[in-house]
Amino acid sequence: MINRRLLNIIFILLLLLSAKTIAAGQDGGNDSSLIKNDRNDVQKIKVLIVYQSKYGSTKQYAQWIHQEIKADLVNIENGDKPDPAGYDIIVIGGSVRIGNIVVAPFIKEHWSVMKGKKVVLFTTSATPPQHPKIQSIYEKSLPEEIRKEIKYFPLPGRISTENLTLFDQLLIAIGKIMEQDETLKKDMGKDFDGVRRENLLPLLEYLEDVKSILAGKK
Ligand SMILES: Cc1cc2nc3c(=O)[nH]c(=O)nc-3n(C[C@H](O)[C@H](O)[C@H](O)COP(=O)(O)O)c2cc1C
Image (cartoon, rainbow, N blue to C red; front, side, top):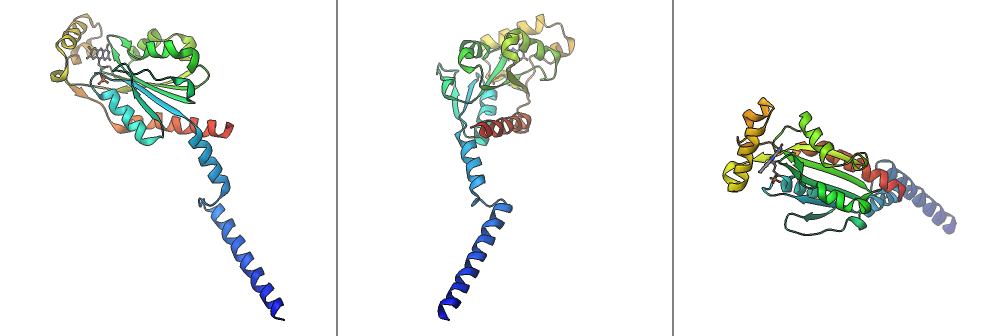
């Protein structure tokens, strides 16, 4: 008699326990082993953020990205040489300077290693990101073979004349004389600051998508 009552109690306890486990799985509780696996797979994705920044605007964007995703962050401005080989996703940032993307040589030099990985490029510039000139600078800086494999996000940069070296002030003055586009010419040499965290939203959304896709494959 006692044994039968004990068995009933154990049976009810087991029922309650399994109902709780199912509920946790349905409402997204972290006890679900499926979710644990997903998270682990996403965490296995290795991300490298490489950037080159003379006056800090590209660095600011790189740091904001680093605050959002688990990644190694390397500044190549001072000669550090990261090896992209061990990474799944490589985010590369650099400014547009005298009509060139400063990190284009890094991409070309490491392309044999980065090919087949997910590569994201962002640039900072004085020219508005949507201006056709930015697209032509992008096309001039990198061959089609590379461009078709990477995702590009041009972002607004920053210029504060008092921080520029004399040489850079001179370069900008010459650039202003040579500029053919009257609207761009008018604004050249003027201070501006277009660096905003929210400019990164499309890039961060893209990174999240890529991480999920790669995690599914792992
Ligand atoms: C010497 C010099 C040349 C530049 N040339 C260009 C250019 O050709 N096109 C452009 O859109 N912006 C140009 N810029 C603006 C930079 O791209 C912008 O200031 C950028 O935010 C700088 O990045 P950093 O703060 O990471 O160094 C130039 C800036 C300097 C100082």
